[in-house]
Figure 1 (spheres, helix red, strand yellow):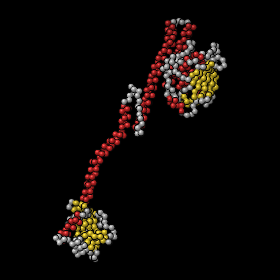
Figure 2: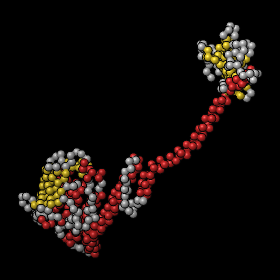
Figure 3: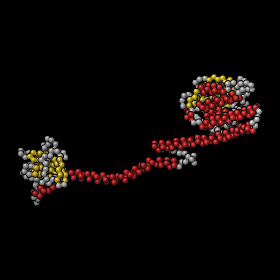
Figure 4: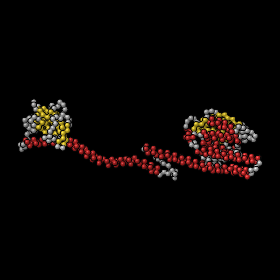
Amino acid sequence: MPRPPQGHPVRVVDATEGPARRVAAPDADVALVRGVGPPPPPADRSAAVEQARERRVFTSALDVGVRLIGPEETFTGGPQPAADVALPARARVPVTLRADGRSWRILSTRVTGARPGVRGTLWLFASDTAADTQVRLVRRRAVTVALLAAPLSGLLAWAVATRASTPLRRLQRRASGLDPRSSSTRLDHTPTRIAEVDDLAHTLQTVLARYDEQALRTAEALATARSFASAASHELRTPLMSMQTNLEILTEHPELAGPDRDEVLHDLSREHARLLGVLVMLRDLGRGDLVEADAFGPVDLADLVEASTEEQRRRHPHARVAGHCAPGLRVHGWEAGLRSLVDNLLVNALVHGHTDGQPPQVEVTLRASGADALLVVEDRGPGIPPELRTEVFERFRRRPDSPGSGLGLTLVAQQIALHRGGIRVLDRPTGAGTRVEVTLPLSDGTADTEDTLPLPRNWMITTADRPQEFHKDGS
């Protein structure tokens, strides 16, 4: 409760008669005046009755109790403690007073009258129950507002949540009906412009796409494994039967003469080498079918060709292998596959690229040709007829007298297709022999080609009469 401002005392103007009234005073905030009353009451009313009526009206209009204690009498008004309750000597600041089970906040100040010697003490009283009443009123209003607003807010929130979750429920219904094991149907999502729902749909589509990719790779791996077993069984049956026959001869005829025994042992050695060759070729063919894109990277073709050429020189010391490689030619590819490509081209040229009585002569050249690297392998053999230049790339296609497995050039064709290259089988420009030209796209140092490699492969699965297609020219 505020105190009267400093410099504006409460003045009491006394008069000889008349009820107390509140009047304006020029030099005071409140003036209590006695004797300056309303017009004289009607004749049928006494002065005491009129005073009592005015006192009740005045008291009921006050929220704060007032008690003015003067030298001779005390004036009271408004709610306050009983007259017999002892008050503190002074209360210049608000203090708490408890009386008759109630709590009061009281404040006092000294007042002076207009005439000399007229002074007293003005006490102001405020009951704490008024604050409690206001609190109860505010509480009732808050509860009323809450009871009215809660159902409306709940309905509004339910409507908003229902509208916001409709795209999510629609996505849930679409996703719950998908079964990748039994159906190829995939999630068809229309953008809703709700970031969370669209992101979730995109994630589901990505997961399903990866599932399809892995399922396809698994199916390819199983088909490759079955084809490997079938091809191995078919191609190994003949050399195994031949080896069994030779072993039976050695077992049943231990007295076999030296030359005959040596011939049988030579056949066994040759068939054993053929078995190993077929198994190695089938393994490499299967690896090419199952290679992943992360196996691809930058490859220096010059280093690779030189390493392969040197290896063939060691394995065939009687042959003449000449090579010239331009440095700095790099491609984006699978290094193991490219090495297999070069090795098989050189082996094929060394095996078939010579005439009777003459050692094999092979020339290898690597140079740039526009945006491609051009690898040329030439031999001095009888050459390949034009009508057979396509068939040589099919599986297990070989000449009757060939010691190979019939898979060497198939591996070459597989790697050409895998690296988006090209191959041509031509006649040697000068003299008899075969010229094989292989082109591979050069890498420009960026990763643009990584998104296009590797191509789908099924060389192990494709039958011999339906070869895998790749860029080739039989001219």
